[in-house]
Structure formats: structure tokens, C-alpha cells
Image 1: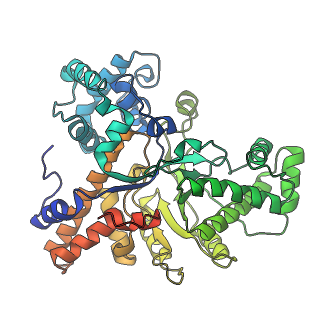
Image 2: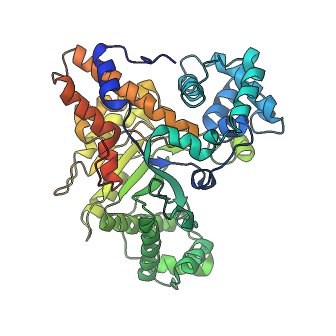
Image 3: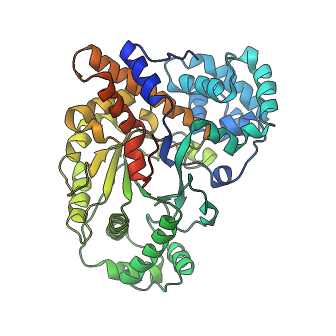
Length: 456
């Protein structure tokens, strides 16, 4: 792709090439498979690397009417790759077109058009390249100047493989903590050696697991506050709910809301004590097509954009702000761009001494991770918050190839700032704006990740 891709002003080009282009990558939230990032994993073929685990591409193929057998079904890997090449020319305007072209050119140094006519050529060329050690998982990741990469792991997962991996540290994903089962409690007890029969024992056990993640370099806790998220303040009955869960194996929906809220408060407290960052991913509507969910699993690319009641977020933040250890740094990701301004304004409602922007809007996320989504978040943060403290981009992806999106974000950021300068809205000189670019693209995320050395 052209070196000046998306850089439509002279200021944008100066900011990108002088300040953004070669910055280290701090990717504080992604869903990469541990086996890929912790080992020198070799990919079977380009379909495994490029298509098999990518719900974005699966979604686009379904929207183009491709039969499911060529997406997640029993078609051969070449047939699936050919189907993707058939779809690609139809993606004008979709961010997948830019991302895929960037993946092909930045990782494989190929500028062959992706289309049915070139499918066989691409298949042969790419598969031959994948035989080279330069295109293993670690070989690909090494191309992106990654200073910190944080794949999600569950609380009870074995994370021993992260030892001595200074640039790779686990992020704690809370999925197994939500709507907990007796099996979750039992596994937590076995992992920590703590007999869990009270809230205090539960806190100790959770703290032990946080300690394990902390020693492995973890600095982030992630919670999916999905469509319809509700938070309940402590009503003094959670001790009884824990005992009921252990003895009966389940709780009523209302009791589970209270108990989940208790677990979230405990997690917030652990994060505050350790200087971690809490990431609240708000508003995913995960239950849409039951048919696709059965076929492709819970992360199959068919989720929608849901809603949330901001009052439940404010009650949570108000409760933890008044707790013993106070408010942990919090990122609020909204999947619904209609809430950008609401979230950005809310972030200014909380403060911590000596902690700039303890609550801030996260980057454009999931279906919003594209040109207009990114600029929409930049607009809301600059209007209602502080760009200077913005933590910037993370991939939130399952593919090692997706790290090209950091370059995509940097280009969009520099283009947006360049236009603000051209319109006279930003009056700072290039060096001052360049420092802003460095903070958004790297420095602020590095600080949240606990990176103390000078990396710029």
C-alpha cells in the first residue's frame, strides 16, 4: 500500500513519519491464543492464519451470501480461502478491505490484488512463505515492535507459560467469574489451596489468583458489561448467596445479579491495590442468531450493538470510589457510538489524587474499530475529556496479523490531528502535536502497563 495511505495533509504526514510510525506497540487487550504467543507456532496454511479464527471475515462472508460450509464448515482450506478471495472485491468501504491489504503488504510484502483470479497464486505464495521461520507466530509478532502484549486469560487458567516473557503478560478476563458455578468455586479453591466457605475466604482466593497474574506481568482486568448490564450495591446478603450457590448449585437471576456485583467489587479492590486498570467493555448484544451461535460458538461474528443504562455504571464507580482502596483506573469501552459523548462526559465525574484521568473512554471497539469509529471517539474525547491522557489503541483481536491495526490507528489519528490543525482548531506547533501523538500511541498505555523504562 502507498506510504501516504490515509495521510491527507502535510501535517498528517509529518506527524506520522516523524513521531508515530516507529513507536513501540503496547497492546493491552487482545484475545490471541496462548499457544500462539507463547510458542514459535507454525501455521498449517494461510487459511488457518488468516481466516479460521477471524469472526470479522466470517461475518463479511455471510453478508455476501457465502455458504457456511466455506466459512466454518467442512469445505477444504483452499475452498475457504478461495471463497474469501471471491468476497474481497465486494468490501469497498468496509475496514476489512484496508486491514487485509495492510496484512498482505506489511507482513508478507505482497501487493497482489485479493480476488478469485489470484486465489491460487496467493495460496501458493503465502503457504510457501509460512514454511519460513520468519512467519511463525513469534516471527510475525516480531515485525510490529511490540513492547507489551497482553492476551486475555481466565482466572482459573494455567498461566505458568508466561514466566520470563517480559513483553507478553496475561490480562485477566472475568468470563468465568460471571454467573459463577460450584465448579468455578471448586477450581478456585483447588488452585489456591483455600477452602471457600465465606466471602472472606472467597476474597483471599481471588486475591491469590490476582497475585499470580501480577507476578506474570499482568496489569489489566477485563469485564464484559454486556447489553442490559445491571449493578447492585451490597445488601448484606451475599454471604448467604455464596452458601446457597455452593449447596444448591445455582442462584435466582436476582441473587446472581447481587453476587456478580460483589465479585466485581472484589476485583476492583484487587486492581486498586495493585495499580491495575479495569476495562469495562459495555453494550455487546451477544445473543442474536441462535442458529449461528450453535454453528460457530459464542464468538462467531454475529453479535450486535446493544444498550446500557449509565446509572448502573455510575453506581458501580460510586461504590468503589468510596471503598477502602478507592477507584482503580478504569477504561469505559462503549460498543454503541451513540453513547460516545455520554461516556466521555461521565469520565470527568471522578477523580483520584495524583492519578490523571482515573476514568476515561476506551478506544473505538469491535464493530467501531474503523475510520469513522476512531475519529468519533477522538471527537468525543477532545470535546469532553483530555486527549493528552487518552490510552490509545489496542487490537482486541484473535489474530497475530491484526497488529497492523496499530499502524491503521496511527494513520487515522495523524490524519485527524492534521485536519484539526488545517482548520485552525488546533493551533499548536508540530513538535507539540507530535508529543501528543506519542502519548496517545504509546506513552499513556506504557504507563498503564507499568513500563518504567524509557521506550521512546
